[in-house]
Image 1 (cartoon, rainbow, N blue to C red):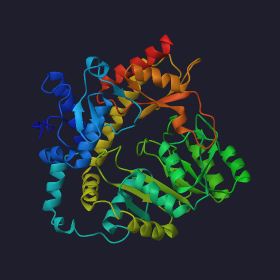
Image 2: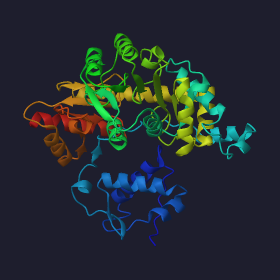
Image 3: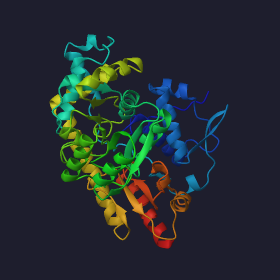
Image 4: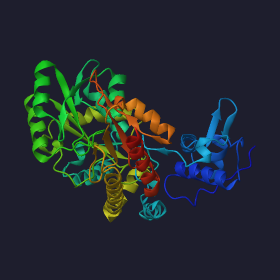
Length: 444
């Protein structure tokens, strides 16, 4: 058995990133070297007091940085020294992650819950559809979005993926059509593929989806619903202003469309009213707690018209059930004492710093970003293609996402790439990645 016990407590942020960080530190210091066999996932999990899944994610992050290699049936080893270890650490800008620091005081919050006298109820199975207390917690968070939502219309979920899975399961049958922006979040594209939902791409401008184009598509196809990300569209960062939101709501109402509003990269209280606020009788709003609070938090909320709530609750009970009650209690405590708002504001400010750095370093390039976005879009000049550019940046140690990852239906992919601003661990690492993107484009 490999006698290696890393000290991950010195590293802030998610535990899986701390595992990758300590591997990188020990490799750099020479404490472990090429060919060194790391503990099995289960063994390291027991040593560190974390889950096996956390170790798996940590090893995967270390592999992404070029630090380790996995051999089927043999284990995980420190990689031989090569470009990934002899030069700067590779920078992943292809995945949009939460900006980790700061994180709430979990120990203090758990102590507060223990002293509240309700701790004994936390291990009791929640009723189908979740506890009313947890639905009230969802109402508190949705108020930050300008959505005064009765608790009876809130469905507690584990995360954004879980909430969207419930909605797709309840709202669609195989072959139904969903209108989406002409470049769409990969999560929506993959979910549609799995459930047999047909995507109808709608052209966009700088204010996202064009209402007239949506209207015309409804005349051509029997569209069931429309998916919108009005605060920050993935991947182009397009944002709907108030008139555009009202126009989309008007078309949806007139054409009898359901609306799925899913805005994980926007910030509560910083945008016009959600589309859901304009037509609550036919709209569903998904609010995930991952980006504003903590990527380890299993808590999200979906608001729904009253006549859909029972179906969603049944689907919730038939799948994984309600989110962990302890996580929902943490969210409630942080909402009530102001911690959630403080952490969300600090993360928003950190995102703004990253956006400012991107605009400064890439000022000569054709980019699209938002004031406080988690990613940016680069329109590539000729003769670049997205795949060629991604291959070249990967050779230089930077990973970005090509446009083909975001196409809907048979829509031709635009000539661009998405670069995540939130995944580099530090502002300095982000600046180095952005400089590499800039230099790659300049050198051709």
